[in-house]
Image (cartoon, rainbow, N blue to C red; front, side, top):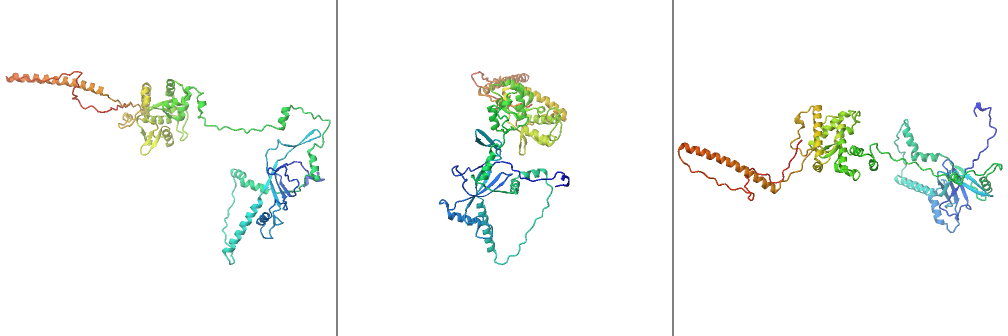
Length: 527
């Protein structure tokens, strides 16, 4: 004791016993075949881990006991050497070990109950243990077998006196352990096994059911002192009393995974107004044909209303709708990659979209912005192609342009305004905005025009009439010139007559004009 505690000396030390019963269950043993009358050789416990081990004697004289097998097991475990401590002293497997596992980790709901003289006595349980056979002797037998094999191999390898082998030793210096590494080490299986092995075994004395000490301990299951004057009447309702005895299980609170803030389920999406639905879909998809957009909306949605909404948040590129730049990059924001302001990002993205209105492919080097931002633009609306740059993501939607020419024309005028702004900002010439002649696709492409046979006949007749009138005028001019020449020379010349074939609707005239293209004529509108 410290010198400062001399004024409060220890008078006597008394062992304190705290009653914490551990009921033992034998789940692999029938209730009619208990171990009450079996000799218990040893018992030990690890209180912190609530781990118990028992050694029970086996009846080697029983007709159900195989002596040869018992001797073989003892030989495998102990071997033939008499120097090492033996597990089975009788050279026969004459005992069996049991090891416990916890039946449940939460025993606050369980108690041992004794009904005595009209009274129910309850004692809380410290733990519930299930005893199962332990086969650690098999591990010992395997260890002995490996040791014998190693000894035999070492004896066969060399008959001469072996010199001490030189072994390489690696020296490591410990370094400070971080808190994160320490937490991982504490939670590792190896650390838990080490901590369990460090707790020492506490050896116990086993007392049978009919032993006097056992009878004395059983008395502690009854209430030893009770004030009879105290009112023990229950003031709880039956339901409350049952809740006290059997409290409901505490359900683990399951946290639902939280998705990104810009992602909604289809059920949540359809609760929004139509304009918000279209805006949310376009912000997530970036590029979409109008038919696909209608398929994502609720059935029965008016397409005219959808067209009004989508023109507020998207632009038409090659018949497909691409979300506007200011929707993706609102005002007073900046790039997450380079910190470029939203206004600059919108101009750069509009330039990329404008180029795709006239061409299918675009080279990345044409946009002088940080590479990460340009890559974001291109990945939203195009895919990379080998040696061709970036190609627009979707094929041209001719059906939409044909069904909605008014919308296509309105979008065309809008793109002309964007083109004018880009020309002022980037200082381009007019020629830079003219699409290439060999462009494969343009913003608004009309369908190929097919000329039928009746149209060909009608065109040939009109050309024949025009040619006839031209030939008639030329003939009259020649006649007039010939008559003048005849009058001056005094010679009379016979009039020249040209046979004229009547042209009627029932006859097909010969087409003397240039050859008409045989096949369909592809008409492309360049804006």
